[in-house]
Length: 188
Image (cartoon, rainbow, N blue to C red; front, side):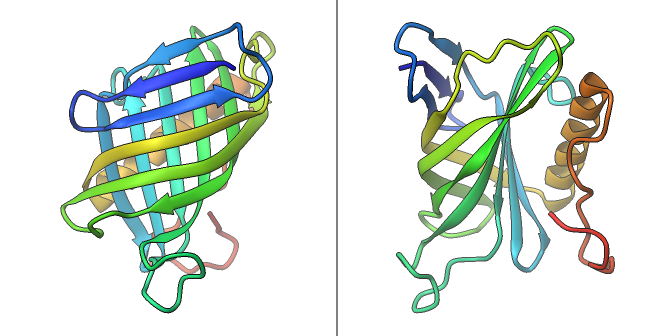
């Protein structure tokens, strides 16, 4: 299996992205920074990056669509589903992997979020012409920590969207909305 071990510098934790099919190829990396925030009461975004914040080598974007609450979350009072986007930049090439899994929020959603990603499956959803898909169908799991900054989290998501769109030559993601914006025509 391809194993991408993403180890943070004490701030971002450890996540593994592992190919389901190919045991010969391995990629490595470390997340330098983790930040999270809310777009509104029910939409949490986590951005983990490796490399410079505005030009990361890899980025992991997690989107949680509601806060887990005891008695209202199907599997566990601290867990919910999560959309996973793993973006890999290689020079001027880009690959966007996406899928879903589960997120356990640990000690809650305070100044720092410590969470556990489990059973996430992703595949290549988009790529520039020269990007080579080494992962194929991949699983992601592990623990991360991110600091809370609502504005910075959304800024980083938008910066990643712009960079991916520029590398692809067309828009890849839909626009995020802020709490004060109407939701009509804009989704996550």
